[in-house]
Length: 394
Image (cartoon, rainbow, N blue to C red; front, side, top):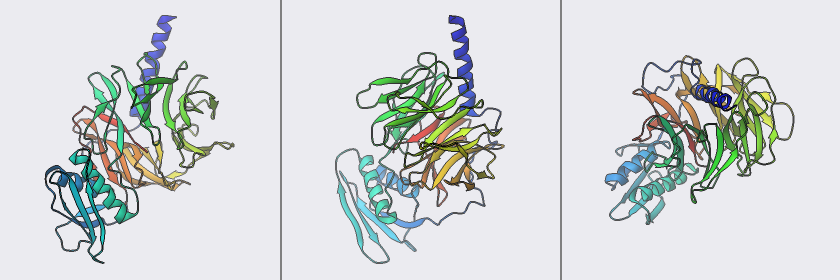
């Protein structure tokens, strides 16, 4: 019996690894460069001047503004100016150069210089675009740690990484509870793939799903009260929902094929997930109010996986598995898919315009940020091994 459990664990582990990497379903790109397809329409970035800042404050503001739809220019043609200083604390002013109106004049205290600069950048972005900035938000991701992987959290630009797990085992698929410092993820700590919740404030970790077979792909509902997950307790991997602590389990799908990668609609009434019920992996949407799942049309994408619903409900980002992995978006009701760039594991920011994803660079997986309207990107700073499966705090 013990030997059979060990063999089963190895089989499930291999299956999970293959599922995460899509091995054999798409080739890794032969070039490390990040490309933007010529047919992908884009919006011109907002021209902004930046003056008076130095050191970390200057570099942070440039990074934050450029990845959120702005372009730092020398002066001519600028629409807005951001000026200030950072002697001891950050002070900044935003001026509309067309109307000459001062839109913002704030002084920031408390926290590090980088934190103050992130706060200024987010305030500037909200004044310019009317949408919340993303610089204050944390990300979680899977990072290589020797022969194992661990879950890390960091600032959105990759600075200040902190390990969440020290399991010395495979971990995968971190997911944030909205508006809370709690993560869900899968860990092989017990030699089997189990789902845990992890309170980052107290350090308390609780098992959520430890059924025989596969327990993976936890996704928390927008209100934080329910969890969607993939379990194989009844045979093939199927989609389930439960209360956030794993109780009141309900099975939503029952097929012979595999399901994976659930994500919630912002209203919490629908779930998008991946199924191979149609013969090849594709996106499906199921209503929690009842009724059969419906296949989501992703015209031109080929095989689809790893969906993530934008917070405004308008689009679903996903990974298209072609000759290589591509990041695509499609309207939430389905239709023509738009290829954004090479990569996988997309996760939307709260502004519904910036996506963090992983891509291959110099023989390892790295994280990058893409501003969808302008198609401008920035790499996320990393001093770790391969990093993948990023998840943005909501």
